[in-house]
Amino acid sequence: MFDELSRILRQLDGQEITVTPDIAVDEDGYIDRECPHDDCMFEFKVHDQDWREIVRDEEVFCPFCGHAADAQKWWTTEQIEKIQEQALAQVKGTINQAMRRDADAFNRRQRKGSFITMKMKVDRGFREVVLPASAAEPMRLKLTCEECSCRFAVIGSAFFCPSCGHNSAERVFRQSLETIRASLDAIPAIRSGISDADASENTIRLLTEAGLQNVVMAFQRFAEALYQHQPDPIRVRRNAFQNLSEGSQLWRTAFGKGFDDHLSTSELTELTRLFQQRHLLAHREGIVDADYISRSGDPTYREGQRLVIRESVVRKTLQLVEKLSVGMAAEDQRAIGTPFVG
Image (cartoon, rainbow, N blue to C red; front, side, top):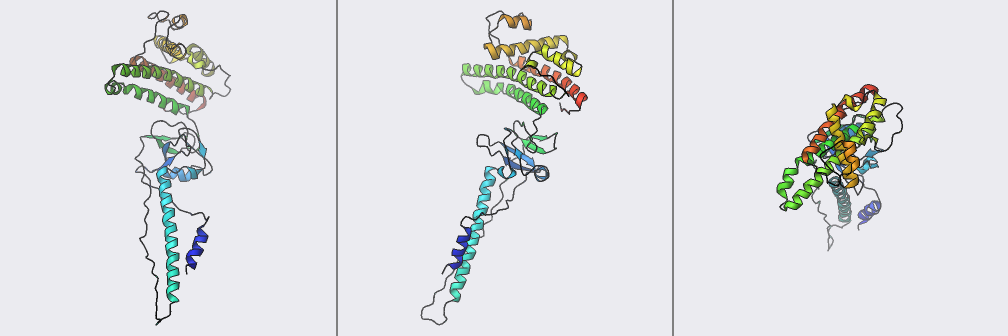
């Protein structure tokens, strides 16, 4: 009786259902993507045209963690749900058609004028219309890869181009400083939002101290990356650029100018003191020793005291590091043509 349905069910058993998903594009022309790595699942966007014309099918990179996978692995959770709904609707439609063909065949076999007459009817049902996954709101940070020109957008930070995997030291450095500044901007909200005064002040202290350490680390990575742009860079010790005197000499040898060509004597002295404070926080939990006093020239502390890092100190470090980095990037660009957007 249900020959056609049985045939269709056998066909569907183990068969791969092909669905052409209808992907929504946001108002700026970007489509939603999601990292397939279970520990990441970072959401981002790629311009629809660039996804079709620049991004390679063989390999796409997560802008946040750098995970690589082929282009079919980057559907968002919502898009996958919609694709599954489309596949189910397609199967339902195929089964409904088979049942109606069986019903028509059964009805044709009935003899007219028989004492008992049976008729089979299969309701056509409702045609399921599965709407495409709605596009997420446009993301604020829009980026263009300087290597392959792919346009992509993120919330927060991006370290890799989704198309070519390029890791832009300049972009990462700039984002790191913006993140530190944003955390400082949040201090009033933290102070008013935490009712426990002790917890509030401890949170702010940890945030400001981490901010100072993160500025120095961001500068270290930035200087190392630009230093490697020269045609034949010499091998330098780890974290050499955290020592401003040593870093300045390395830079002068490579590019013909030192850090004192971009900062005044007083600015370089102040930045040296701030870098030394970061060293104490990282290695001595902020407890002042004789080496700090000798290297920083800071007369305001004695041995055994604990550093006090205020918001203004971190903002000053940001200001001086940004000023120094602009000069360094300009030299790098003149030497080898590497673009920098300040």
